Length: 232
Image (cartoon, rainbow, N blue to C red):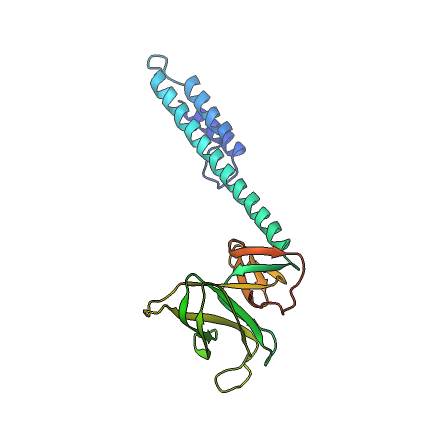
């Protein structure tokens, strides 16, 4: 191919491709291919095998680009649907899977609860602050399998009202042989906002954040308890 023809093809390619992209689009590739065929040596023409191979390579790359664009579009659509679904929970009462309890006002009692998977000969609940320290331990005695409810007066071991905020339940349940029994904590409260700080929507019940996958039930109205109370 003469130097002038090569420069002409390169100039045409630059016009059809944004400066600095470093990639050939479909139009530029076809122009280069046509120029290559037009200026091939008549005595040594391009073989059909090489021609087909180039077309196959371009077709494969083009399909991969299309698939990638489709995946990105699907992700955007799913994200939009998740955001819209999360926003629809605002103002509704939900029951979610969580071991957090919310103290709204110092000295206010908090209704809390959890579910035992087996009958327990003894149940102890440790209430921990955000740093993991135990602020109060409650002995509940033997409990049957199923829902267990209790009330925490919102005070520490010294009888001092704890500061408002989020606390965590740590249940220690054992059978008659002293073997540990599994349990599951559930929070029931009104959703007052949605957070997107983690890259995905999280429902906010006071200062408690949970994902949509942790929602166990949705209710139309507020419960009698305060927002953030656990399901009895």
